[in-house]
Amino acid sequence: MPYKTEWMIPERVVHQRLYDELTAHEFRARHNELYALAEQMTRPICCIIDTRDVQRIPPLTDLTRYVIEQTSHPQIAWVAVIVTRPLFQFIVDLLIRMNRYRDVRMVASMAEARGFLSSRVPDLVWPVELHENTH
Figure 1 (cartoon, helix red, strand yellow):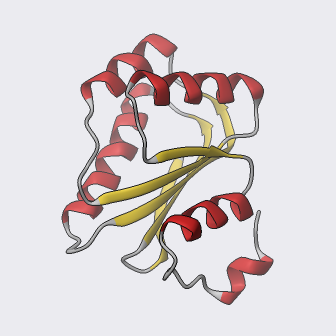
Figure 2 (cartoon, rainbow, N blue to C red):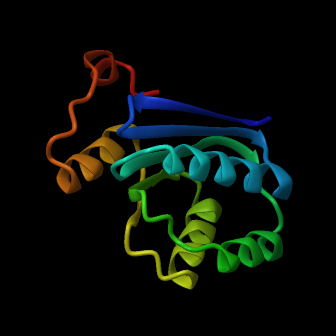
Figure 3 (cartoon, rainbow, N blue to C red):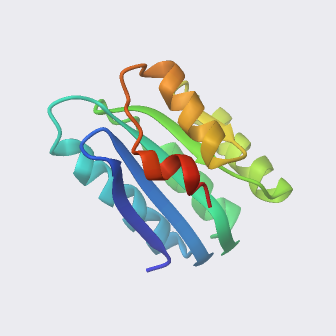
């Protein structure tokens, strides 16, 4: 699978790193994996979705159809999506607007993602090694 899901801050912040070529099936699987983690939590979590290493995404029609069918999960409080490529920025912005997500912010770096989440959830404590390793 061209993505990896792991806790950045245990039971508080999930990090999903996407890379290479992502198919529609893998996009759905990534989303379902995030929702499955959220289901296990007793309090809301945050998520950082890092798309900087993605080479190709599913067709816009597939993404649009899938995003329109989805609803926000009540256990996912805030999402920061790291996007640096102009075409991906356009697509992510379009998908956010189409679904009227208010809890999703597009950012350009890991530092900006951490800053956004910290501004929304002030009690987040980031591991020291994250201050050095921003990818």
